[in-house]
Amino acid sequence: MPLQNEYAIEIENLVKKFGDLTAVNGISLKIKKGEIFGLLGPNGAGKSTTINMLLGLLSPTSGKISVNGINMLKEPEKAKGQIGIVTQETVVEPELTAEDNLMIFGRLYQIPADELQKDIDFALKLSDLESFRKAYAGTFSGGMKRRLETAKALMHTPQVLLLDEPTTGLDVQNRSKIWNLLRKINKEQNVTILMTTQYLEEADQLCNRIAIIDHGKLIALGTPSELRQKIGMSTVLEVEADKDSLQKVEQIFRKIGLDPRISGNKVFAAGGAKPVEKVERILKLLSAGKIDAHNISMHEPTIDDVFLKLTGSAVRDETGDFKGGRQSAMLGRGR
Ligand SMILES: Nc1ncnc2c1ncn2[C@@H]1O[C@H](COP(=O)(O)OP(=O)(O)OP(=O)(O)O)[C@@H](O)[C@H]1O
Ligand SMILES: [Mg+2]
Image (tube, rainbow, N blue to C red; front, side, top):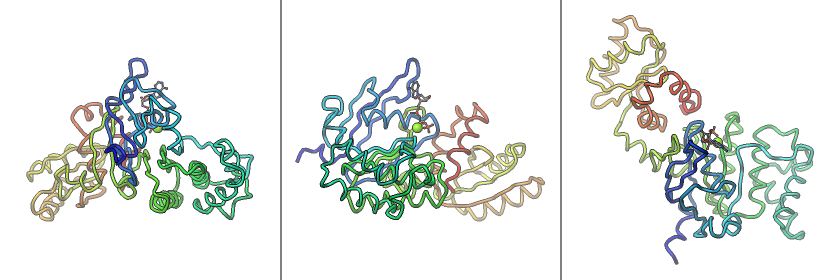
């Protein structure tokens, strides 16, 4: 068996420029068959641009893409045939029933008439929408629409499913239904999943491996636990406070020998040896300095911490509130 067949997707030095802007800046990735792989990054990181090149919707400025060993640039139709797509925008037809949405899509993919009904039943069952088959898609909740779209993408039994932010904007309950659906598809249908997300928790809990991208570049790659180890923190100490107090909290961290960073309204650092004692000392110093902290915590590193450690650099902090605000708004929900 050729070695490349081990991989569902191979991306080599992928670049996409829009005029002066380099949206994707030399990303290389190999996604193994059977993986649930997450592309994690903030708004504008280049997630959709990467996915759209994989779908053949955008042509790369340079670089190589192959799907199941098939070169996307040389044999685009064949490569695209391997892939099911759930795009960032919801594209179900509101004036059609769930069943008819699937029917139209199945015909588009030229599924033979005698197989179509069976495929529709299967897709509705998989997405837990059987009891809504005759309901109009326009009446569905955001989560149901997303599930219907995912069902649609599976109609032509693709080996690889690409999803662009499948759970953005959904509530916790709907998000967890999508997670269950994706796990089921992955396990029972052996479909390789590549998805983008802005949610750290989602990447952490759902994905076997994660690539963190920012400004079009790959900044970290690994399993969630590898990424946690990578940042060399066994315990994270964190204090949340008003913006005005952050500098003082930072000084306290330094005073007890920690190497703090500030992100959003938090000061955090690797706890090192005897972290509990350090928390006690921080508490005393906060109290002595009459600093009003909102939250003090000691925890195992999360993907959130990985992201902050990797992107909370001096360069980023110089740009001030925008970056911090963006991170806490889009990426800080992971706890
Ligand atoms: N067709 C386009 N023409 C010009 N610039 C574009 C185009 N598409 C994307 N961009 C720019 O490329 C960068 C990456 O965008 P992209 O949509 O890939 O980000 P993203 O990670 O998917 O973000 P989001 O989380 O907001 O969906 C952004 O700066 C965006 O403005
Ligand atoms: Mg996007």
